[in-house]
Structures are given as structure tokens and as C-alpha cells.
Amino acid sequence: MSGALAAAIAVGLAALGAGVGNGLIVSRTVEGISRQPELRGALQTTMFIGVALVEAVPIIAVVIAFMVM
Amino acid sequence: MDHSSPTIENVFGIGWLDFNLSNIIMTFVASLIVFIIAVIGSRNLQRKPTGFQNFMEWIVDFVKGMISSTMDWKTGRRFLPLGLTLLMYIFIANILGIMFMVVYDGELWWKSPTADPGVTLTLAVMVVALTHYYGVRLKGTKGYIKEFFSPIPILFPLKIIEEFANTLTLGMRLYGNIYAGEVLLTLLVGFMATGAMETVAGVVPALLWQGFKLFISGIQAFIFVMLTMVYMSHKVSEDH
Image (cartoon, rainbow over all chains, first blue to last red):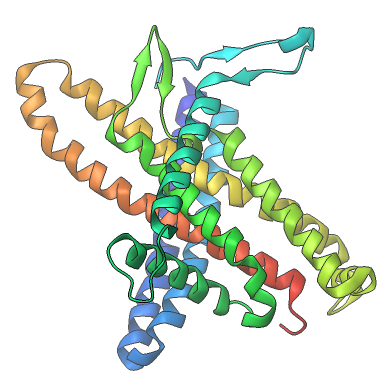
């Protein structure tokens, strides 16, 4: 029971952090595109790489959650 | 979610050698579909492309753009077939589990092959091994080893750890996204199966989630190929 609770807290906090991080990345990308629309392609590519790197964190958290459950 | 996979254990009497039949069937199905699409798209090539050839050329141009955004086209040209194959294969593999899933006798037979960590980690290991191979081939053994000590030698342990972290996250990212999607889809279908009212209530969320999962499938295939090219350019290109 406490293992399930620990897993839920771990996944929830990781999702919270990743959500904030992704939001920052995407908002800055939108700012950059609105400032320089001709750089759209390059900025989007960089954004996707950044989002993918941030996403690794909750995935690791899920693995840890499965381990404690 | 709570069904097992059709595994054959201890093949040839070897203790650790297990085969997941569902994975084998689904990787074969995905390869077959990609093969058929590629054959239809590239038969009867014409100067003025029509129909399916347009689609194929669009995909090739898309991969070309991805490669040339990470390295120069002279070195990146040889990775076009790799990127094209990975993109199409992963996308098809991801969307195989969206339409339906087949559970027979408590065992899950039809699903996305990428919803299994074995398949995705195999892909990731293959990609990282290829980056090392091309690193040695294009820059020579000396240049390849020098790359590990490149800015300052004290970073060498971090570079070693980075290789393993890259492999792990590349595979687990794809697996986590697709598996989570399938779990939620299974939950929604299980909810819809409980009664008539629930069926009506569950149709819209299920449809919405299927649409979103289609989007996730495309994004994950794109990210996998993009990161493949980024890792490749770290090993291959002269200046970064």
C-alpha cells in the first residue's frame, strides 16, 4: 500500500516538473518564432529535441515507481 | 493491461532464451506494411510524380531536411536510407495498436510492437552501435577515441555514461509513450464494456485519445529519428 503511494507521488512530481519544463521550452519557442518567423523550422527542431530530453525524466521516474511498487 | 503475453520460455532448453510470439508477429506485420508502402511508392517512377509517388517524395524530403539540420549533407547523405526506414517502421509500428487490440485466451496478440521495452531497446542499441561504427569509419580510430577526450580529458567518464544514458532514454522514451497510450486505451475500452450508458459516455474520450495517440505516434517516430541523427552527428561531424 505504501509502495503504491510512493510510486504515485514519484510519478506525479516527475510529471509536474516535466510539465513545467516543457511549458517553458514551448513558450520560449513560440516567442522566438513570433519574433523571427523565418527561423520556424530550425526552432521547432531544437524544441523537439529539448522536449524529448525533458521527457526522459518522467520516464525514469516511472521506472523507479515500478521498482518501489 | 492485465493480460499476459504469449511467451515461449526456455527455447531449446536454454534457461534465459524466451520468445514473445506477439512481438515477433507484430514486428513482422509492421515490416510487411512498410515494405508494401515502399514498393507501391517507388514502382513506376515518373518525372512528373502522381499520387503515391508524391507521398513517398514528401517523406524522403522530410527525412532529408531532418538530416541536413544536424549535419552537412555530404556526410549525412549515407544516413538517408537509415532515417527513412526508421521513421516509416516506427510510425507504422506505433499506429498498429491504435485501431484495435486482439486478446485471445487472456493473452495479448495484436498490439504495437513498440509497446514492449525489448523491441524499443533493441532499436536504440542498434542505433547507438551504428553511431560508433560510423564514428570509427568516417573519422578513423584515432579521431574516434580523441572524441571521448575532446574538450577536456576530465569529461571522459561522463562521455562513457552518456552513451549508456542515450541508449536507455532513446528506447524507454518510445516504449513509455506507446505503452502508456495503450494502457489508457485499454482502460477506456474496459470502461465502455461495463454497460450501455458507459458505452455512450466513453465514445468521445476514446475517439479523442485515439486521435491524440496518432499524433503522439508521429511525434515519437520523428523524435527517434531526429535523436538518431543528433547522436550520429556527434560522432561523425568534424566540428560541433
